[in-house]
Length: 314
Ligand SMILES: C[S@@+](CC[C@H](N)C(=O)[O-])C[C@H]1O[C@@H](n2cnc3c(N)ncnc32)[C@H](O)[C@@H]1O
Image 1: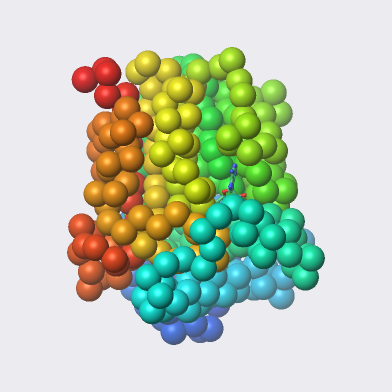
Image 2 (image 1 turned 60 degrees about the vertical axis):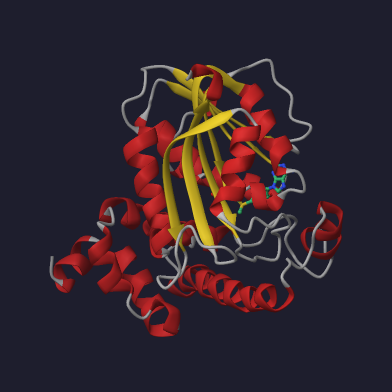
């Protein structure tokens, strides 16, 4: 497809991509990379158009939201230098993080402030798009007609919403501690026209979340690095999962963001927690964030992603 054809068919996506290319060195090869990545343009256009509509068609507002991805990416690079220098993340406990970041009175938002950045990263960060592609091909397709899915933390809500849209016989539950995330996810679900009786969004700490239900599928994206006790979280997910259920897990390894508190140094550290919690990775997608690094390297940023099943079902 030529650039003009792309622009005509997917105008909001092209507008966002153009903005990123023109305003940040980090995104200067966006169009070239996208061509190699088999990006789902329909999905990308919908994501961008939903944001544009949310901004009531105001171009400046739309660009401001796209711009959050630039701020987020630059912050990641800056903090990654901190990690290289010190060998540890800025904070190591939830209380410390909550005091200094999530509940900082100087910040306008209660909870994580980067929801739009996370939203756009799903199509504009190579590793995140590869994860989403893997999610579509290996988790969203070929399911039973009915089932229950849990997403914790629900974050932007993109994953659970996409799943429910493509599995109309399923019901969903989303749990997150952050008010900003809860509000954002509710918006995304409404843009996707997910019926209210099919989704329950709960503002709760995963450690306090109780339910009688067992889930057939669980989504747990970019979370273990946000908690002090990731093994405890994995054990909890194990208890919440049905016997033949599956978990879609993604973890940031040795990648500093201000609210990352548990430092995994290599993919094998995550695999060890997965094993100790009683899971087996059925299929993995492990990516180094930077092309020069190996996905199995130590002390290099890695995006670990896997579909897990219960070990006792082997
Ligand atoms: C990087 S986001 C992940 C979002 C989501 N999985 C996604 O991919 O869009 C991390 C999320 O963890 C939530 N969070 C942090 N600690 C939590 C806890 N103890 N219980 C539930 N949610 C928590 C934050 O509010 C934030 O929305």
